[in-house]
Length: 318
Image 1 (spheres, one colour):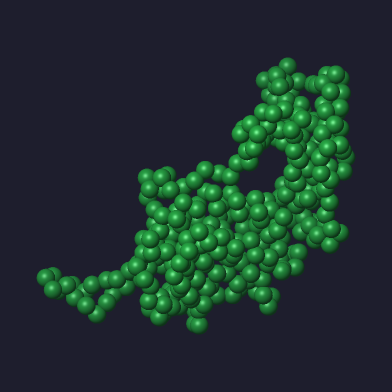
Image 2 (tube, helix red, strand yellow):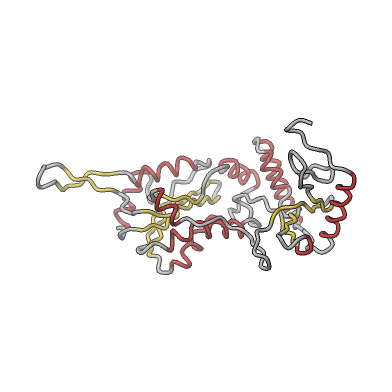
């Protein structure tokens, strides 16, 4: 058998896995999804198939309709089952897991701030999504320098000022569907001196070429709730029709909706946290994936000494 081929599972191994899966399923919580959410997921998945995102479409079709069986070092008797969620940006069922993961990873950056403030920068409405243009526009804006009316007393040269005087921060991208247009806002928690909102509004409107831009600056008094406030914008329901939501997921594929700016690599490694990991409260070990449970019944993935990809009970699970 070649190195890339997977060894066939014996009849005894399949029987043992089937018996184990049935025993686990009898003790684990059932799954379910409302008919309204199911029809919406199917409509979004159908649109994603047309856009060439078949893998994402399969995940959305299985969202809240399948269970993931997890085990820790305690053994099969302490196994648990959690809902399989698609973990896409627009899915409300995935919001708590994404929230916990991002809060644990970036919360230390917010807690290190001494002069934290919330900054909102609105972008012009558009019927099409342009995430890359918005992010690149902001990064050009924070590096931009403009001439002032002051001159250096020694050299006589005109002095420049930076339009963005903040040291570092977290940037959150919010997309909202309203009046048949996408409204994109940048929500920021930044560390640095106080910002003159009048000057910031003038500079931002001049940079983006828009009038009456939505710009706001507020001081963050409680750092414990600052991260929750910022992440709330990433998990808001968009209220967009299924075809527009599918277009949003296609445009947001592999895009970061929460990013860091202004920190060098050395300081970033000191402040960034570890990913969100679920640990057993008895043995303290992380839970590991062992199988699925869905409409076709529970299936434990056969692991061990078998070569190649993990085996199931004879059916593909995607």
